Image (cartoon, rainbow, N blue to C red; front, side, top):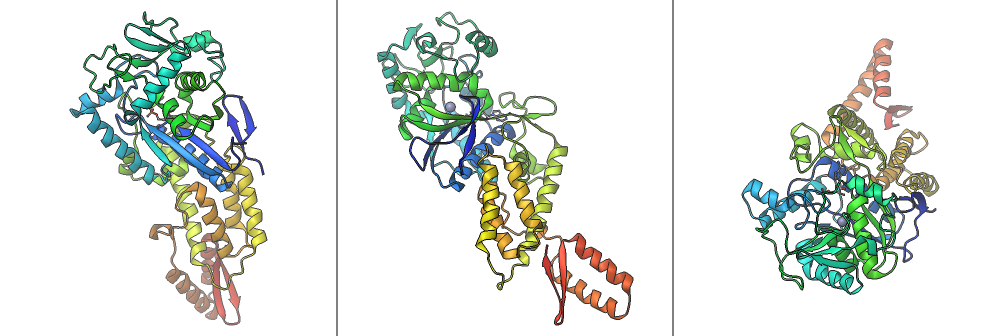
Length: 468
Ligand code: AMP
Ligand code: ZN
């Protein structure tokens, strides 16, 4: 079965064929650690987690690298605005290093709560300054750079087809990025590789370089670290759609400039989560976090479930009403599964062909550009299938949860809307009602079982039950 993904570069759903058979190099742009990740950022990390697990489900060995941006990211993704890390530090009266450590830890705590698996390699920009300097040196040798007013710039007109990822004309790209006129730049879309002379004379994070003491431009770290850890050929590069026009476009120019050949095979971008009131912005400070959702009584997995209900390439509007719907959908699902898990029987026969048929259906949906919403319908079909016994159902649930990661195999008290003791006492009560010819009560109890999706089996040895 082929695995297909929508590739931003080709504007097409392409069959996934990695550079090396069976192995996937995957790079995802990580957080800028000057504040908590908001639930929009986390939607993108959930999409990337689902992608990685879907590839693993399809038997690929995935090496996943993610950076932590702890220097160089200005308020705009271009070269304008304040330094995000410095802003965070002055807001909280801490050093930039303290801020970086605190928010990196907070980020991974959120990821844990959302069952987002840690990347194979997590690398910090500030630990890779020599790699970035080397990359600039190579670009300089190849004639892609110029120095102006002390800063080193990438000259985009030297790079053929600069706008190929954004797939729009240079005029549109320029208009879209609303760039301030910077007299240092030959072309307004040129971007900084190394700042020695920025407006932040008090910049704390600075390093020696052949061009003077300073710090790297933001885009550089992803090219340097992905080449270092994955190599010259990268299978998949991901991020949110906001990165297409500037950050990823600049990464392509830097990496292909230095390598001299095509770099990334598949570019995949997650659409935004927006509030019904508009865009959520990390820098404005007005945003929703996982902790805030927890304070409001939601579990982080309610949020994961909410995200999984929609296609990663569609914008998702967040509201507490829709999160409520997701929470009750998730609760009902766990209740149904809890009954299945409770009614597993050691004598259940496991039929491999039946299990395989369902796995193939599930796999077909996830291989279709991560069609998770449809993959869920397979899970519901499994739960409804009266031919399958509870052990077979639980094998499939556990298998699907490798990707869904919703703790479906964990039964919590709250998941069981009825416990075994109650079921057994209702069975006894029903038998008594029948014996005393109280048909109305007997019918009532039968209806209660129907509502609970429990099937009663009257045998000569008495009544037993199983989950439907
Ligand atoms: P940042 O920490 O701002 O560098 O962003 C981290 C990741 O979140 C990047 O992949 C962004 O593209 C992505 N992102 C930013 N805002 C949103 C949003 N509202 N919805 C989904 N993803 C987002
Ligand atoms: Zn990046």
